[in-house]
Structure formats: C-alpha cells, structure tokens
Image (cartoon, rainbow, N blue to C red; front, top):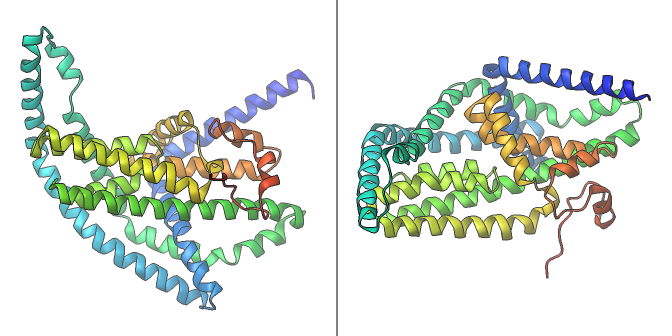
Length: 361
C-alpha cells in the first residue's frame, strides 16, 4: 500500500468517524434510552444466564429478573424522587449558606495578610457543585421518564440474548475462528459488568450508611450518586464526594466535613484498589487520561447519561478491540501504563476468554 493510499484511508476513516459522532449527537433523544436499556440488560444478563444454567426456562428466568429489577427500582426510585425534590427545594438555602461560609473564611484570612478578591471568590464558587448535581439529577429524571420504553427494550434484548450466538455463528464466514473472538469479548464484558456493578452497589450501601450515621441530609441520594459514579474510576469518586462533603460543612461544621471526606477516601481506596482488582484484574482498566477524555466525549454527545455511561461504553470498545489480534494494540493504548499487552497476558490465562488477574502476594 502506497503512502498516498494510507493517507486516503486514514482520511476516509476519520470522515466516517465524524459522521457517526454527528449522527449520535443528532439522535441523542433516541440513543440515550436505548443505551440505558442495553446497559441494564447487560447487568441483568448474568442472573438470567445463572437461572438458565439451573434449568429454569428462559421466559421464567427473564420474568423473575425483570420483576426483581422493577421492585428494586420502584422502591429506590420513589425514595430518590422524594430526596431529589427536597434537595432541589433547599438548594438556594445551601448555596446561600456556602456563600456566608466563604465570606467568613476570607475574613479569617485578612489578619494573616491574605486578601482574596471578590473576583477570585466568584470564580471559586462551591455552590456551583451543588447546582450541577441538581441539574444532573433532574436530567436523569427526564431520561427515566421513558421507563416503559426502556423496560420493553430490556425484555426484548434478554429474550434474544440466548439465541444471538447461534444466529451469529450461522452468518459468519469462519465461525470457528470468529466465534472465539466474540466469545472472548462477551465473557470479558459480562464479567466486567457483573463485578463492577457488585462493587458499585456495595460502595453505595456503605456510603449511605456512613452518611446516615454522621447525620448528613439525603444519605440515600448520595449513596445512589456514589453507586452511579463508581463506574467512573478515580474521577467519579471525587465528583461523588463533593456534594455530601459540602453538605456536611453546611450542616455539621468543618470537623464533620473532614470526617466525611476521609470516609469517602477510605471506602474508595479499599473498594477501588483492593477489592475490585482482586476479582477483576488490572488488565481491564483504563488510563486516567482515557477516562477523562471519555467523560468529555460521551458527556458532550449524550448529556448526563453519557457521563455515567462513559466508562462502560469506552470499556466495551476496549474489550472489543482487545478481542481481535489486529486491533489489540489500540486496546492496549487505552489501558493503564502498568499492564502488559493482551498478547502477553493470554499466556497466563487458564482458559480462552478468561480475565487476567495479577498475582497477589
């Protein structure tokens, strides 16, 4: 292939990428509910397959899992809706209180010779964090208003999941070779979503209980936020900690705010650096730069839902790239710096498609 052909191929691929991104942006209202449905179906597929392996009929397994999801989401949704409403009503009071605390803080610094101008204070406005949380939660509520469409899409995806491998095998030109790629991708994605969701649920429960013991308002709401943002490594835990820390400062004072921040740090260090790598392995990680860029990219295209699904979407792309030897190098570039390429990791795997894990001392 000549140099000119290589340039033409690159430009063609880049143009196709731009067109796809523009199409996703234009179809945001249609794409967002579908992506949420795919995300929920991917998480729900694990218990459905578990029930099917124990000889539960496919229709009954789907019914039991969807019923459990409805009961859990309905109860949690009612509590969260009430919390979001109360939080939105009290948001002006919280912002005014934060402004008063900032003014008192600047007055305390004046005897020390430190003078913070009004321009600096206006640029560093902690109340903007609370306002951003309220806007994001209201945006999520608007998306979840399409709950009936999302529910039916989840049911249809789950009903087709068991027959999809057979259909795929029948249309592939080389089923024996290509099915290994799809199986490796499916097993890694399924294990990633199952472990990540379990760790996120545990993180949300611990955060809710911790904040309830401290007496911070809306502990269930902040636990849900911690659960959702736990899908975004490093950056997500920082974002999730800001509103409850500020709220603890407003309600209970600086000491409790420091305790709240320390609690978030401890929980996320243990869950993110000990528990999660123990079961998942660092081979399924993303570099911090990729996480940050994916937040910007998917958030711009899909709004608040894009922020929450940015890492699962990027992680899906990474797993798909790693499953194919010709594109595995791109998946390696998306991963953290301390991980070997997939080609070297496969020698240490016990079975094809298994997720690599680091040996623990």
